[in-house]
Image 1 (cartoon, rainbow, N blue to C red):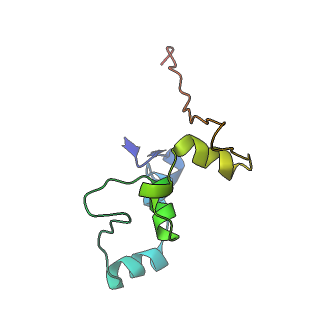
Image 2: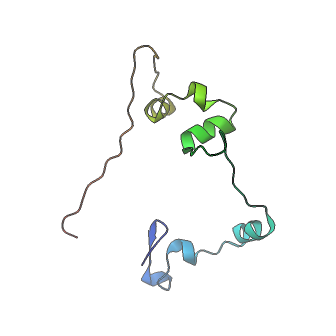
Length: 99
């Protein structure tokens, strides 16, 4: 059975590494801490990590965000000229027909 982005492992009592891991500090924080939801831009807007991080660092993504492609390009050290450059973000995938 698949776990969270992981597979059961016979060497770990057929558990995923996440299920098998000993996490006393995280467990204590979850029990004693305060859990809740945070809307980084405004309530009801589903944000990605890109716009959420901008907002958490004090930038208004509604005014400044130009898309994930430009965000990733600049994060890689590329210089973007707003009047001339366009950057696209692509995710690649394949299908293993043998399985």
